[in-house]
Image (cartoon, rainbow over all chains, first blue to last red; front, side):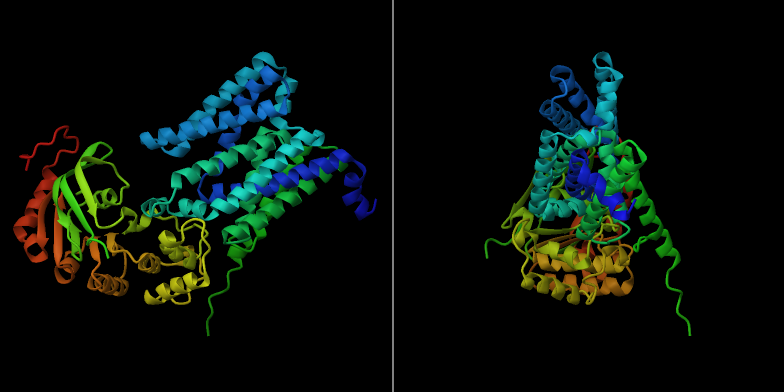
Length: 290
Length: 249
């Protein structure tokens, strides 16, 4: 097998591979910048919590409407935003911090979701919701991902300055009259939307991986937010290609293969990335002496 | 220019997590005044500044801000409120001072960045424009935050412990800047711990120990009797006192 056969043949031959690739690339473009911002805000585990929080919404929709893309999307968005708003409310009116109240609400939500799915659906259905169907993306799913990605990129471009100011120094923004709380809410909504559209492709548990792993890796390549956006999106796309190829050639399940691809990029970045990696820290310039 | 900016307190009581920490404060920061807010830890000094900028609900009484929009008050919080690992360049941090003029959506023009660079030069950080804030020392970070205030061009400035953990060279540079602002007719309020600086540099003092002990010319406000009383007040204060007993001390 030649290299070009190895790299291109699967995508040239099979429509489902092309669809999977397009879906994963779009997902990377939309969700990785959100992952970068989550990491900067020290909310890295928020994506995880939100992904779990989405489950009961999708499950309820699944019970009432079967495997309907739009029903599960609306259910997931409603559940995710409910958890985000309740957690935000509790952390504002009580001394409990936002991460702790998020943990509380997502656990309640997850318990509810597992309960709902197990009372009605079979285990096969549960696996379907949890681990995604990246090799069986239909037109509607791809359209949903494309719409969400487009919205995400446009909205991020519009609120970027507000968002960064709010992340960095919420007190200052409040003092000069910026709409900090609103932009935080817009940001959380985008996170939920991306997780919901992504769980059609990769599954609830895996979508967080494509959001956070390339973003965490990007931190070792750039010290500016735009730089981390670019690096992270590239890593997301590379991981998607690598994961899909591995799953095709080695007959592995595709979603975990993509996430492990992203994991490999992350591990490599921690080891040899130019900014703060283990290698760059040990290779510090020696103290110059005459 | 509209009416001179004044911050007036009418019998203000402020609570932090439902414990009142500032009791029955009345008086005003007059236009063009330069006042040090002094007092023991937990006396409510930072709480007072937060209430002025609207970051804190006022429990009782009123704070009236006259002749100026509250958003045009420049406020320098304590440094530990900022995440130094944030991937931001010094120039961008300083340019935040232009927020009221540029806002979240308008274009940042080249002249705006020039002004930010000028502000950096004024605080002695020329050449630091593209450094990330994580590489700055504590004193350099404080200089950068002063550059941001410089761009805010505010008529009223509130500084919360601006010289804490800052070396003497930086302190004296930044103090010069504050004097310049005062000389330009701006109102300055600074929470300070170093009584030497207050005595020598700052004309007015508000001595706060949950209740205002003294408010006026620094030499009189910081009399030995007043300082003693401030210390006794803060010691005598029951942490969980449910009612306000004005005769307690």
